[in-house]
Length: 562
Ligand code: ARG
Image 1 (cartoon, helix red, strand yellow):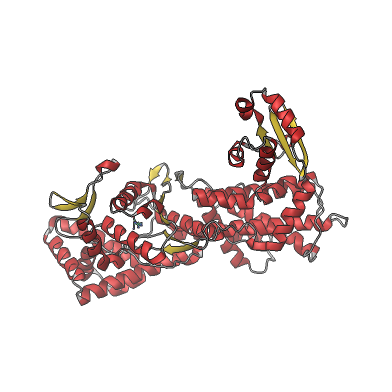
Image 2 (cartoon, rainbow, N blue to C red):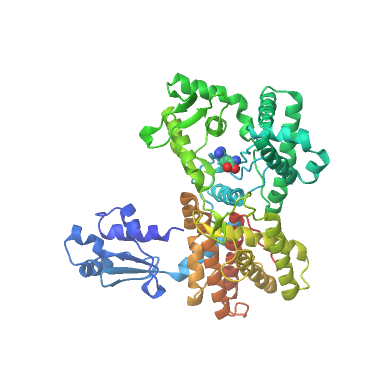
């Protein structure tokens, strides 16, 4: 609920509209200490308009203010401090949460409009990198967050499934490959053939000619070439899908680069008609000097199209197919120039909707401060990370709760949750150094900590065994205030996450709420039979609902017991 807005309205009324509600909202602060109230308005921002000393302004305004809905409003020096009426607030917030359950915090920013999210998008026959993993996890969370704000996300896995490298791969497979090997370990074997091809081609340049020949066959629709291409794609996808399954992530479309093969001529023709294509050293380019960008490469001198050409075709296809409100590309920061070029070319083509295209970049994962790469052997095997995390979760459960019913399932939820949460807890543009011990840590600001807090709330509710529907909340406990305030913030948190495309807004909030709740729980005997018992349980249930929903938005499960 937007209580800030309410405060702004009260201020605006008191100044007879001399400052608009919108202007005032931007000035309102949240004091560091609860003793200074829940919101504060710095009256000195009015000093110029009203030509008075700020202290006096604060005093006079307070006298004019309508205090309903507030415990008190007071002037302290140049500040006006607002104290919300805790009773009314708790009734309002907890009532709504119990009533709306997991729909609490739903917004209608999107009005049902579609938002394609280009995410994950690994390359066929190559290992999925940490970057692809980050894209998968961030993209999935953004999809959940956008859906909560009534956008309709469309999760697209824009597979790297086309390019001259397939010629090399086929050539190599025909020489050294075996079907059995590929079936056993698709990515491992295909990568191996590919690497061997490069090694041998150094001394045997005729291999490159053969590879070109294979790629030409593929482009011309040759049966064998096409069969191999499809098969490599399918086998690679099987490996990727194992990771997706473990993370519980699905896609709405696997239209990758190859999908645009028959949509490329149109793009080139359109560029031509609009007079945007230029020749440069035999290649076709679009000049982007006025955007301060390097030219966009559309066609190589030998006629083959490029990554950019495919992205142009994809952008147009997505606009036509989804009539999108926004179109997102969750891709590492190192491609930011590519997306600047993509937007600029579309703009040059006269498409206003290029403004609705957003690259959602994220930082690099390093290890020991160094960049990861397949070539240097510095790669992190995701399967192993997940295995380790799940194993650790299993151990903890054996220690803490050996009689737990569905141990294995819970261990999976906790282990995988730890890895996902770790990725989403910092602002996405931050680089981070990968440290397995850190990723599978369960104490401190981690996913399992939030999960434990949720499970604790659920266990209290189970013990109480009360039906809380229709409860008249009457909570007058200062210990509960921080938790209540946070619960009331939920919709504003969602809004901020949508506007900044930042899952970390949600993860930080979840940590904050879990901490506040644990503090509350440490100071309060929830289950004592007294007048406020049901109100306290309403608070506990509300915390459980909002923690679970926050975790869901991040793509993390919340077991009821652990
Ligand atoms: N396959 C590309 C890579 O691994 C990422 C593709 C991102 N999406 C896009 N539409 N360009 O670098």
